[in-house]
Length: 242
Image 1 (cartoon, rainbow, N blue to C red):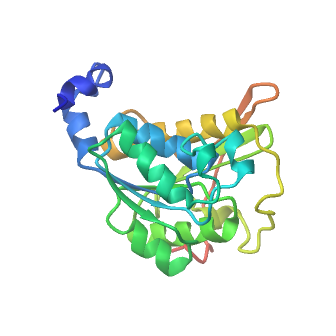
Image 2: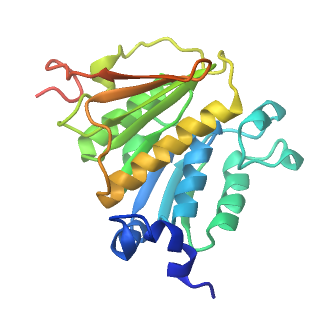
């Protein structure tokens, strides 16, 4: 039997983290909508950090075109459900992890059901209908959501704290047009954004550091230029407006 605190010794050593925060993380749950290149990196780093439970949704089977970015996958298992492959590889990272895997696309009801009971949600689906369903569920449940996405050589993320910060619906139309597989992906770009989402998730779950609030972080990886954009709530937002 591995010594739990020895396994996480190096992050326990972080100033202000210690065993107390590690125990909080051990007893925490997170929902991840999508375990592709971005969400897969988030899931892997939350598992390696010692989170207690992950609830994950991802629809579909593994294709060869997934392999340039989805590091939880296995090229020898083309055609198999991605959640099954991810389950096996996440448990190799952290055998104590409690996993709930769902091979579904998200709608308002399924997002609500899966996010309920989690301390944070990470939005990593490559389409806005599912992201907006997650957003609506998080606002109803009062669960913080990390909105993270990439396109080509750029990426962004921001945190949604229900009724405190703008929600996703404040910032975009319900009919936002974005072709699901119509954009280029460098795997390392999606991995970096997914890793940043994992950092924010740990901070939110353990009250460690200062999570990004009311700002969107955008990174242009072709020039390594970073921009923080101020965000404002829409008082007439149909999801979070008072």
